[in-house]
Length: 72
Image (cartoon, rainbow, N blue to C red; front, side, top):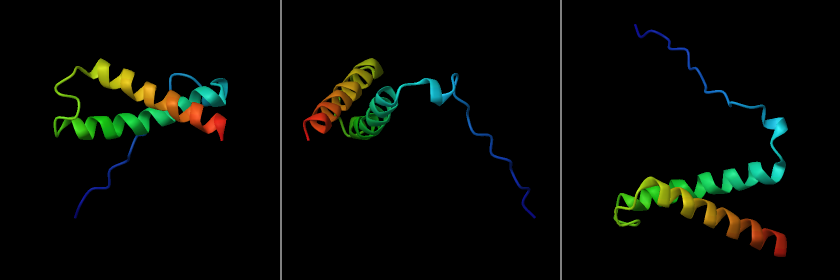
C-alpha cells in the first residue's frame, strides 16, 4: 500500500494583497512568457543565453502584453 504524501505549497514572502494588481498581472504575464522561453531554449531558442537574459525577455514580453491590453 502506498503512503499518502502531504503536499506543502510554497508561501509568498509577502501577502498578495499588498502587491498592486498591475504588478501581479505583469508578473503573471512574465511567468507565462518565461515558460515558453525556457521551453524554446531546450530547442536552441535563446541560443544558450544565461537565465538573466530569459528573465529580461519575459518581462519585455509582459510589458508588451500590458501595453497592448491598455490600447484595447
